[in-house]
Image 1: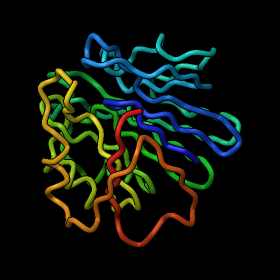
Image 2: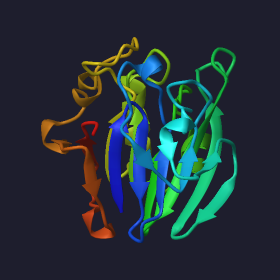
Image 3: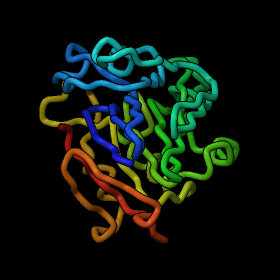
Image 4: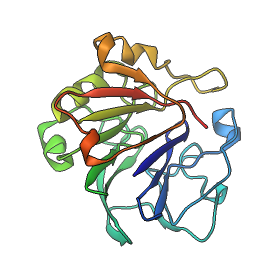
Amino acid sequence: MTIEYLGHSCFKLTESTGTSIVCDPYSEEMVGYSMPEVQADAITVSHHHGDHDCVGNVKGSPVVIDKESSFDLPGVEINSIKSFHDASRGKKRGENVIFKFRMDGIDVCHLGDLGEKCSSDLIETLLPVNVLLIPVGGTYTIDAEMAKEYVDRIMPDIVIPMHYRTKDCKLDIDKVDEFLNLFEEDTVEEEGSSIELSRTDLGEETKIIVLRRS
C-alpha cells in the first residue's frame, strides 16, 4: 500500500490493486495553502469543518463516509469509531469520527481531529494499529504530550504526525517539532510526500515518519 501526505490532516491511501481513499480533504481558505489535485474511490470525513470536509476537491465519483459505519471497497475494509473533538465530551467542538482501514494486511488508523484524553476504553476499541495518523498541533486537537501518550499506549509500528503548523499554514497550532522532541532521535525519520508499505516493513519498535506534503 501507499500513503501519500497531501497536507494538514489529508492523506491518500492506495491499496496494491489501486483502490484509493482520501482522508479529510481541506480548503485553502481555512488552512492557508491549496490541496493538490487528487482522485479517489472514497472520501472519509472526520467532522464537518472546512479544513477537513472539502469533498469537492477530490475528483471522480467517490463515496463519502462521514459517520460511524462499516464499509467495504475492493481490497479495503473501513470501520469508524465515534470520539470527541475536545476534552469535554464534545461540549466545545462536537464529535469526531476516527477511521480504521485494513488494506494489504495493514491496519491504518486516522484519528481525525481527536481532542479527548487518552482512555483505556478508546484504546481498546482502536487496537490493533500498525500505522497511526495522529494530530499533534494542539489548540483544536490533542497536543504533542497527549499525542505521545496515545502512541505509547497504542504502540503502533509507524506513526505519521498531522495537523501541525507549517510555513504556509495560518492556523494557530504548534509545529511538529514539539511532538518529535518527545522521542529518541534515532526513532524519527523524514521522508518525501509518500511511503510504500508492506507487512515486512512493520517492526518491533515504533518508528516516527514525518512526511512533507506533495
